[in-house]
Image (cartoon, rainbow, N blue to C red; front, top):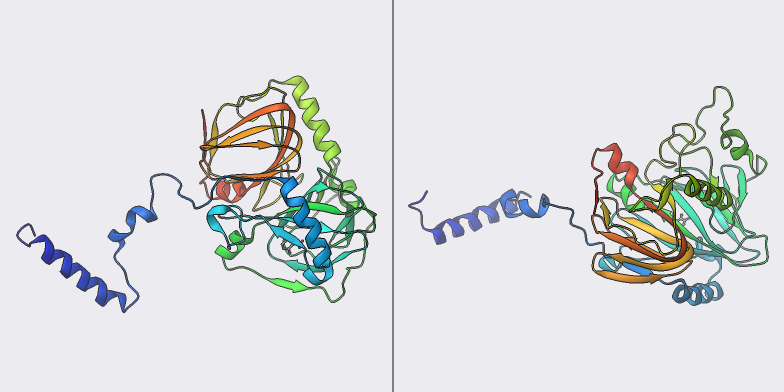
Length: 348
Ligand code: GTQ
């Protein structure tokens, strides 16, 4: 081979590529490094959406379109590195949904799983598979895959929550299904609190069959309980240098993550806390619940306050500086990575 001149090789290669190309065939060696990079590569960029910038757009959208017409009146939080793709990380979707007093967001179901994290207002409900739950700020609510769900606001104030969906994960597998319920609102078949009573107090009915398959049978994890758990945890053990006091929402029937595709967390950072740098392979979306401070994501520094949303891309170092005692909610695609043996983290 050494005797064949470089230019000749190169034009012979080009000629081979052209002929193969007609048969939908391509040379791996031209793309190998891009396909198998040394470390995570993603178009996902760090970003922080200030709620005080978002709130006027949400209000204006509320005047221009009804929940009924929109089906879901949501402002999609688009990652600046992936504009137009309706995603906040490569695998996850996030948006801010508004429901005004008297409105209904009609019932449907889809194979994508959804979470709701309530950002502002109370008096609205979400219904899942025949049971309604009222929403209050800080509540973490799950809509399991393929369960009919509708939202309604019989109260007297606007309610806004962050939606998190595994849209890109389901799309990757081309396993998307969607169906509209024949009526606007599904009938209520169980009393409010039934799911929590059956599964959410360390009990389960004898012979319980998981009502939502791989998803937690509890679909509302109220903030009052999460906050109290953080508070009590913080009294008995030292804060973790990277996370403060951090807990994951679990499925009481398995002890694992509450959803099969999305992990959700809540953490408490003490006032004046400066975290050690941390990175992990699950790009993570945060919603600020209480407190304030700043976060350094890679080379970007953002000040945050309650109701802001920010995104930390995969394998990007994150550092927190809490000015006041701070509570952060977050979610990521960790369960899928763990199931496939891919998840990694690095401290320091
Ligand atoms: O509430 O069912 O943000 O189906 C996107 C798609 C919310 C919902 C979104 C949805 C929903």
